[in-house]
Length: 253
Image (cartoon, rainbow, N blue to C red; front, side, top):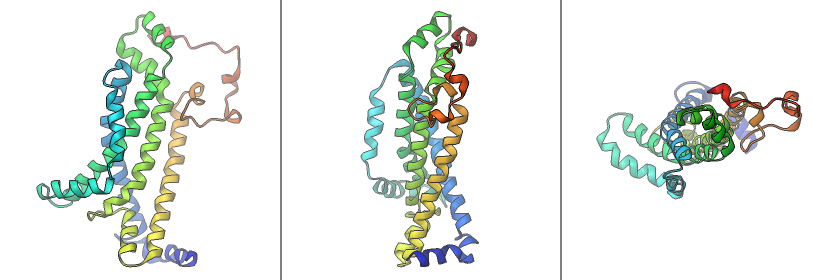
Protein backbone atom coordinates (compact mmCIF):
# COMPACT_ATOMS: atom_id res chain seq x y z
CA UNK A 1 0.00 0.00 0.00
CA UNK A 2 2.82 2.38 0.89
CA UNK A 3 4.48 1.70 -2.45
CA UNK A 4 1.30 2.48 -4.37
CA UNK A 5 0.85 5.74 -2.44
CA UNK A 6 4.43 6.76 -3.24
CA UNK A 7 3.79 5.90 -6.89
CA UNK A 8 0.72 8.15 -6.79
CA UNK A 9 2.75 11.07 -5.49
CA UNK A 10 5.50 10.59 -8.08
CA UNK A 11 3.08 10.40 -10.99
CA UNK A 12 3.39 13.72 -12.93
CA UNK A 13 -0.26 13.46 -13.98
CA UNK A 14 -1.31 14.20 -10.42
CA UNK A 15 0.60 17.49 -10.30
CA UNK A 16 -0.89 19.34 -13.24
CA UNK A 17 -4.28 20.48 -14.51
CA UNK A 18 -7.48 21.23 -12.64
CA UNK A 19 -7.38 17.83 -10.94
CA UNK A 20 -3.76 18.20 -9.92
CA UNK A 21 -2.47 18.66 -6.38
CA UNK A 22 -1.46 22.36 -6.77
CA UNK A 23 -4.91 23.39 -8.00
CA UNK A 24 -6.73 21.33 -5.36
CA UNK A 25 -4.42 22.73 -2.68
CA UNK A 26 -5.18 26.28 -3.81
CA UNK A 27 -8.91 25.57 -3.64
CA UNK A 28 -8.57 24.09 -0.15
CA UNK A 29 -6.63 27.13 1.06
CA UNK A 30 -9.20 29.44 -0.50
CA UNK A 31 -12.09 27.73 1.27
CA UNK A 32 -10.15 27.77 4.53
CA UNK A 33 -9.19 31.44 4.27
CA UNK A 34 -12.69 32.57 3.31
CA UNK A 35 -14.19 30.55 6.16
CA UNK A 36 -11.80 31.93 8.77
CA UNK A 37 -12.39 35.47 7.55
CA UNK A 38 -16.17 35.16 7.84
CA UNK A 39 -15.92 33.45 11.25
CA UNK A 40 -13.42 36.01 12.57
CA UNK A 41 -15.60 38.94 11.53
CA UNK A 42 -18.37 37.48 13.69
CA UNK A 43 -16.56 35.79 16.58
CA UNK A 44 -13.68 38.13 17.45
CA UNK A 45 -15.68 41.38 17.85
CA UNK A 46 -18.34 39.45 19.76
CA UNK A 47 -15.73 37.85 22.01
CA UNK A 48 -14.12 41.24 22.70
CA UNK A 49 -17.49 42.72 23.65
CA UNK A 50 -18.48 39.82 25.92
CA UNK A 51 -15.10 39.73 27.65
CA UNK A 52 -14.90 43.51 28.07
CA UNK A 53 -18.45 44.07 29.30
CA UNK A 54 -19.14 40.71 30.95
CA UNK A 55 -22.54 40.57 29.27
CA UNK A 56 -24.20 37.74 27.35
CA UNK A 57 -21.67 35.12 28.45
CA UNK A 58 -24.25 32.50 27.59
CA UNK A 59 -23.42 33.08 23.94
CA UNK A 60 -20.05 31.39 24.44
CA UNK A 61 -21.70 28.26 25.82
CA UNK A 62 -24.33 28.36 23.09
CA UNK A 63 -21.64 28.58 20.41
CA UNK A 64 -19.79 25.61 21.89
CA UNK A 65 -23.04 23.63 21.86
CA UNK A 66 -23.21 24.09 18.08
CA UNK A 67 -20.20 21.77 17.77
CA UNK A 68 -22.50 18.87 18.55
CA UNK A 69 -24.36 19.38 15.25
CA UNK A 70 -23.20 16.89 12.55
CA UNK A 71 -21.26 19.02 10.07
CA UNK A 72 -21.96 16.87 7.03
CA UNK A 73 -25.69 16.72 7.75
CA UNK A 74 -25.79 20.48 8.23
CA UNK A 75 -23.93 20.98 4.94
CA UNK A 76 -26.35 18.81 2.99
CA UNK A 77 -29.35 20.54 4.58
CA UNK A 78 -27.89 23.99 3.80
CA UNK A 79 -27.15 22.96 0.20
CA UNK A 80 -30.71 21.73 -0.33
CA UNK A 81 -32.15 24.89 1.22
CA UNK A 82 -29.90 27.53 -0.33
CA UNK A 83 -28.90 25.80 -3.56
CA UNK A 84 -32.14 26.46 -5.49
CA UNK A 85 -31.89 30.19 -4.64
CA UNK A 86 -28.32 30.62 -5.91
CA UNK A 87 -26.76 30.28 -9.33
CA UNK A 88 -23.61 28.61 -10.58
CA UNK A 89 -20.85 27.74 -8.13
CA UNK A 90 -22.44 29.95 -5.47
CA UNK A 91 -25.01 27.20 -4.92
CA UNK A 92 -22.16 25.09 -3.53
CA UNK A 93 -19.73 27.72 -2.21
CA UNK A 94 -22.12 29.67 0.02
CA UNK A 95 -23.51 26.66 1.96
CA UNK A 96 -20.02 25.18 2.38
CA UNK A 97 -18.43 28.41 3.62
CA UNK A 98 -21.41 29.09 5.88
CA UNK A 99 -21.31 25.65 7.52
CA UNK A 100 -17.53 25.71 7.93
CA UNK A 101 -17.77 29.20 9.46
CA UNK A 102 -20.25 27.86 12.02
CA UNK A 103 -17.61 25.30 12.93
CA UNK A 104 -14.88 27.95 13.23
CA UNK A 105 -16.84 30.43 15.36
CA UNK A 106 -16.76 28.51 18.72
CA UNK A 107 -12.95 28.30 19.15
CA UNK A 108 -12.48 31.89 17.94
CA UNK A 109 -15.20 33.19 20.24
CA UNK A 110 -14.06 31.15 23.24
CA UNK A 111 -10.40 32.09 22.77
CA UNK A 112 -11.14 35.80 22.43
CA UNK A 113 -13.55 35.87 25.37
CA UNK A 114 -11.24 33.83 27.61
CA UNK A 115 -8.27 36.02 26.73
CA UNK A 116 -10.07 39.25 27.66
CA UNK A 117 -11.64 37.67 30.76
CA UNK A 118 -8.23 36.45 32.00
CA UNK A 119 -6.61 39.90 31.98
CA UNK A 120 -5.43 40.87 35.47
CA UNK A 121 -8.08 43.17 37.04
CA UNK A 122 -5.25 45.19 38.55
CA UNK A 123 -4.09 46.12 35.05
CA UNK A 124 -7.58 47.34 34.18
CA UNK A 125 -7.84 49.33 37.39
CA UNK A 126 -4.42 50.89 36.83
CA UNK A 127 -5.37 51.88 33.29
CA UNK A 128 -8.64 53.43 34.44
CA UNK A 129 -6.79 55.15 37.26
CA UNK A 130 -4.59 57.07 34.83
CA UNK A 131 -7.65 58.25 32.91
CA UNK A 132 -7.99 55.74 30.09
CA UNK A 133 -11.41 55.40 28.50
CA UNK A 134 -13.14 52.04 28.15
CA UNK A 135 -12.06 51.81 24.50
CA UNK A 136 -8.45 52.59 25.39
CA UNK A 137 -8.47 49.96 28.15
CA UNK A 138 -9.76 47.39 25.67
CA UNK A 139 -7.30 48.05 22.86
CA UNK A 140 -4.19 49.14 24.80
CA UNK A 141 -4.39 46.85 27.84
CA UNK A 142 -6.84 43.96 27.39
CA UNK A 143 -6.23 43.00 23.75
CA UNK A 144 -2.40 42.88 24.00
CA UNK A 145 -2.63 40.74 27.14
CA UNK A 146 -5.29 38.50 25.57
CA UNK A 147 -3.29 37.73 22.40
CA UNK A 148 -1.92 34.33 23.56
CA UNK A 149 -5.43 32.94 24.05
CA UNK A 150 -6.80 34.72 20.97
CA UNK A 151 -4.07 33.17 18.84
CA UNK A 152 -4.74 29.81 20.46
CA UNK A 153 -8.34 30.10 19.29
CA UNK A 154 -7.21 31.05 15.78
CA UNK A 155 -4.91 28.05 15.59
CA UNK A 156 -7.61 25.68 16.83
CA UNK A 157 -10.15 27.07 14.38
CA UNK A 158 -7.69 26.82 11.49
CA UNK A 159 -6.91 23.16 12.16
CA UNK A 160 -10.60 22.30 12.45
CA UNK A 161 -11.48 24.08 9.23
CA UNK A 162 -8.58 22.56 7.27
CA UNK A 163 -9.59 19.08 8.37
CA UNK A 164 -13.32 19.59 7.86
CA UNK A 165 -13.07 21.51 4.57
CA UNK A 166 -12.79 18.11 2.90
CA UNK A 167 -16.60 17.90 3.15
CA UNK A 168 -16.80 20.70 0.59
CA UNK A 169 -16.23 17.98 -2.00
CA UNK A 170 -19.55 16.32 -1.16
CA UNK A 171 -21.81 18.96 -2.77
CA UNK A 172 -19.49 19.19 -5.77
CA UNK A 173 -16.72 21.63 -4.85
CA UNK A 174 -12.99 20.99 -5.15
CA UNK A 175 -10.20 21.08 -2.62
CA UNK A 176 -8.09 18.24 -1.28
CA UNK A 177 -11.27 16.49 -0.19
CA UNK A 178 -11.89 15.73 -3.86
CA UNK A 179 -9.12 13.11 -3.75
CA UNK A 180 -10.68 11.46 -0.69
CA UNK A 181 -14.26 11.46 -2.00
CA UNK A 182 -13.36 10.36 -5.54
CA UNK A 183 -10.91 7.76 -4.27
CA UNK A 184 -13.57 6.14 -2.11
CA UNK A 185 -16.23 6.39 -4.82
CA UNK A 186 -14.12 4.67 -7.48
CA UNK A 187 -12.28 2.24 -5.22
CA UNK A 188 -8.98 4.08 -5.71
CA UNK A 189 -7.96 3.81 -2.08
CA UNK A 190 -4.42 5.00 -2.71
CA UNK A 191 -5.93 8.25 -4.03
CA UNK A 192 -8.03 8.59 -0.90
CA UNK A 193 -5.01 7.88 1.30
CA UNK A 194 -2.92 10.41 -0.63
CA UNK A 195 -5.64 13.02 -0.14
CA UNK A 196 -5.74 12.34 3.58
CA UNK A 197 -1.95 12.69 3.80
CA UNK A 198 -2.09 15.98 1.92
CA UNK A 199 -4.72 17.34 4.34
CA UNK A 200 -2.62 16.25 7.32
CA UNK A 201 0.52 17.83 5.84
CA UNK A 202 -1.34 21.08 5.18
CA UNK A 203 -2.65 21.15 8.76
CA UNK A 204 0.86 20.65 10.16
CA UNK A 205 2.30 23.34 7.87
CA UNK A 206 -0.37 25.88 8.83
CA UNK A 207 0.06 25.07 12.53
CA UNK A 208 3.78 25.75 12.23
CA UNK A 209 3.16 28.98 10.33
CA UNK A 210 0.64 30.22 12.90
CA UNK A 211 3.03 29.32 15.72
CA UNK A 212 5.61 31.61 14.09
CA UNK A 213 3.02 34.36 13.67
CA UNK A 214 2.02 34.02 17.32
CA UNK A 215 5.64 34.32 18.37
CA UNK A 216 5.92 37.54 16.37
CA UNK A 217 2.73 39.26 17.51
CA UNK A 218 2.64 38.21 21.17
CA UNK A 219 4.72 40.22 23.60
CA UNK A 220 7.76 38.25 24.87
CA UNK A 221 6.53 38.67 28.43
CA UNK A 222 3.28 36.86 27.58
CA UNK A 223 4.67 33.89 25.67
CA UNK A 224 4.52 31.70 28.73
CA UNK A 225 0.72 32.17 28.92
CA UNK A 226 -1.79 29.55 27.78
CA UNK A 227 -1.51 29.11 24.03
CA UNK A 228 2.08 30.39 23.98
CA UNK A 229 4.93 28.37 22.53
CA UNK A 230 7.95 29.40 24.56
CA UNK A 231 10.29 27.30 26.65
CA UNK A 232 13.03 28.47 28.99
CA UNK A 233 15.73 27.97 26.37
CA UNK A 234 14.00 30.43 24.04
CA UNK A 235 13.51 33.09 26.68
CA UNK A 236 14.97 36.52 26.12
CA UNK A 237 17.54 37.28 28.84
CA UNK A 238 15.98 40.71 29.30
CA UNK A 239 12.71 39.02 30.27
CA UNK A 240 14.42 37.04 33.03
CA UNK A 241 16.21 40.00 34.56
CA UNK A 242 14.62 40.58 37.98
CA UNK A 243 15.75 44.19 37.85
CA UNK A 244 13.84 44.88 34.64
CA UNK A 245 11.54 47.86 34.97
CA UNK A 246 7.76 47.16 34.93
CA UNK A 247 5.69 48.50 32.08
CA UNK A 248 4.20 51.90 32.92
CA UNK A 249 0.51 51.90 31.89
CA UNK A 250 0.55 55.70 31.80
CA UNK A 251 2.84 55.59 28.78
CA UNK A 252 -0.10 54.28 26.71
CA UNK A 253 -2.58 56.90 27.89
